[in-house]
Image 1: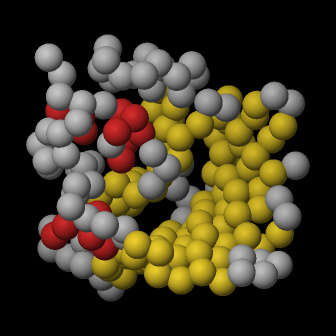
Image 2 (image 1 turned 60 degrees about the vertical axis):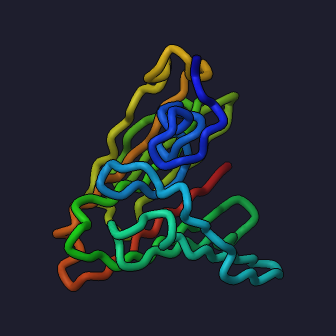
Length: 178
């Protein structure tokens, strides 16, 4: 009785954590689902010793943002920079930067430390180190039909639109491993 294959904006499949943006490491605007017709495309790829990839994420947000792009850069062998550029509009209320993990999470000044299997990954909010992240427990998942993933949680940095007073914003997060 559950329509897993429907792709319309209000179809049942998007209520499942593993099928919507709440269950992925991405941006969420106004605590809303991404637009199903929004096609996010690779805008640029730079190979080499410090590779980079950029995506135009604007279509995923419909009229909730004027513009959004995400860039990944690998500045070193054990680090990854995630940089989001956003331009808000009158419909923008909040922007949430989120990362999903099964690791143990320790909140530290400027970010979090993830610990799993004897390894550590440090996540630093470079652009807004003063923000304290929220940790949302997703074990058990929101719906009984959802896939059970042991110890799953979402790390969230919430940005009210007022933080982007001039209408534009830059969110920079660095991940560094041992």
